[in-house]
Length: 609
Image 1: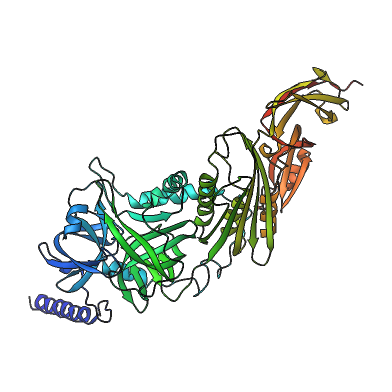
Image 2: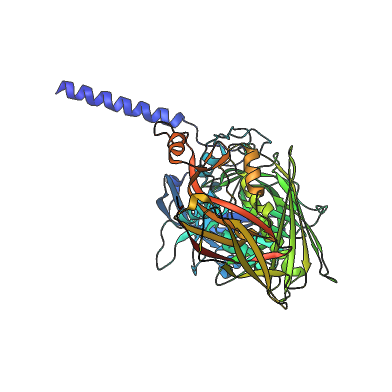
């Protein structure tokens, strides 16, 4: 019995010692700001929040604690509050208030960040300040002043590089999963809508941009501010403050787009805002600005702040689950872009100049929105049109890479495909071989108001069976609006390798045929691949050949026998050639854009001995 008592006394002393040790562990502290942990927050407690309702100065609004949702996200609770303010009683949850600091008994508990979809009461969820501080104090891999990733060597792997569309879709799926953890018939508690105020952007361009950004909770709002003055006004704030409005510049210039949020806490280590991710990109680099709120627009669907940037200051450097982090001393990469449209007499604007956020993967998507908006404003005619697009991407240390695309249609420029330079932009800013800053983008579009194109109407051959090694004549009938059909004769030598097999010939417009390209082994290979294409104003005649070719170490080796294929694809090595179907190509110049495709199949006779 005495031994048990002694053991209990020993345990008690250990517990007391541990408690004393825990009491000595300092809680997070910020000069001039006291912090309250979620564990100390109780229902019924009252306090206040700070946000900008109009102008640039934060104002107070009252709050009452309703309760705490434990483990709302992994290792993160969420405090439910009911704000009280005439504006909020009318507007409910407001997009752009994300990040507004919430104080209970004079102590900071976190940031206004979440709300219920279609909720009638202005109930909001507060992200704990401790979770936000953890994101602030997370070590950054990127050296100060460098683009994320540029200081870290990429792993060069000879694997297919994901296309731009697949990259964006993957990022969108991840963002959507993060934003909506539980979907119910009664809505979900999700991050408050993040408004992106846009000016100078056309309705179609805004709609398409909204569709692309919807999974991230970012909502482009046309006519909701966004432009801002070219130079800061004399009375524009010069520093961030708790509860102040903060912006993230996506586009600046003749077309502007700025995301709005609220500063939670200014610290010597950086500025915390939003209380939820913007796009959940991790380490990143977006231009940041101080912002001015014009008005809070109440809406049954989505209430939001109408705002504009007033002074550029620093960069958003971390975009994480509990907060975004802004470094007021940093700068983010941007890409100047010019769009010029020719052939539209009397257009009020033929030149558009903007600056894009130079962050992957946003740059190419933003550039596409700029071109779409410029076209929508300048030329909306439903008419026969042909066009030539010259897009040039200026790569630092490598000079310009130019693309020329042709096209035509009967509905004006509707459906104009993205210029070739935009694919290069997407592939270069996120490639497997190293960072390459983009210095600027130039797009020149020339329109001709005529249905200046041909289309493949039919293909026929001069025989149903042919001999190997003989010459085959193909008659390609090209249709053209307002003109008689044009007959083109294409002469092909029948490959001897096809004796006893089928001759499969496809005739297509140049932009519809895909060249045989090897997987890139270097940045030069990547640029070459994106730049290599058949001419749009020609026919490409493709004859399917027997056997296979292989791409290996950046080279394409066509028409290999089976023994060679086995040698190039050893089972004991991971470095092997990638097979592809053999084609023999013939290019037939036409002199105008050719649309469509057709094919013909013939029998090749056996070789007679």
